[in-house]
Image 1 (cartoon, rainbow, N blue to C red):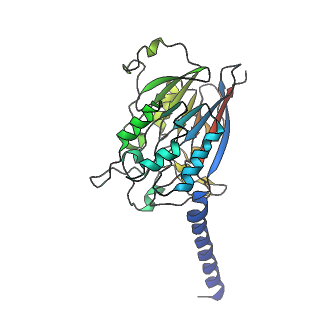
Image 2 (image 1 turned 90 degrees about the vertical axis):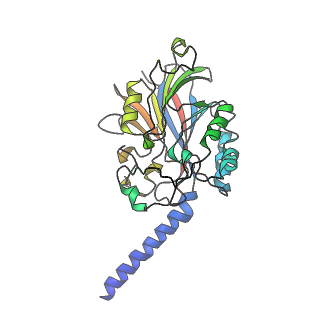
Image 3 (image 1 turned 135 degrees about the vertical axis):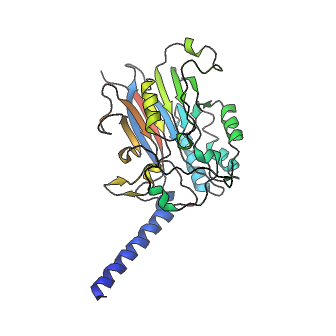
Length: 317
């Protein structure tokens, strides 16, 4: 091999090692707070602030993440929406409750993700490069204490939107909510308007100021159902923003059937272009890149872990 070729290969190897070190030692813990404005409220209303938490994948010992999430309480938002995959370890309940404790005092709503039900297991990382890397749970999968987690969330007053509808009064506004169980595990069953008997008088409630759709994984079928249901804003997670992205190009995959251009951030649904929301028949969609990763793939590149404050304001016109 010619010296020049050896030098080029050595340079590429060094660059690759540097990128891996950055992704696994720096960026994966470089938490970011995103702030997004959504013009969706009725005319004349004051802003409404929502903290969107997703995909913490918390494990024992991640104190820096715990402290960072707790500190978000200083933002003094009006509502917290948790779109699932909160933990990734059988012993993570104390750590998760420590992280979420100040947020549970706020009005909130939640859905579960696949890793709320089952702890992640070692997989071939190449599987994540598939367009929709669904992996069935096996007898070896470790079931997490998700029933206790959901009960604790409900006891704090958070609305459980697992294939359910509900309402919330927040900051002088009436919100209607609809959610589904995790579409990634095919657990979603979109609730009809007359199929939620445990909410007395829901159909007789006063007209809502805002209708929110909530899901863990933003599969197209669910987004279409929520848009058809009249959702003003859909909130989801799951994608990790692609987790490994290419600068300028963006995410390589979304781990569902959502196009990669909508892997994170605020977009319109549907529409020919993800950056042209707000038109007739279009619904706002926010997808969080989330705060964690599987413990078996603890890397992020060009895709910082994040939480988001969505400031809802009155739509123009």
